[in-house]
Length: 53
Image (cartoon, rainbow, N blue to C red; front, side, top):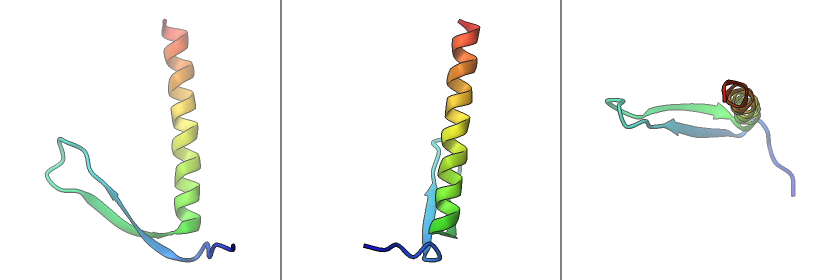
């Protein structure tokens, strides 16, 4: 099965303290890049928390 990385999807972020959800249309390629960035940020946070303990 092949995936079209230029397919457009809607991403919606919603946090409890926001007045409204934040949504944007992005390509699957952009979504993949965003998820890699978030994964890196999570890893950096975990390392920093271990160092502070």
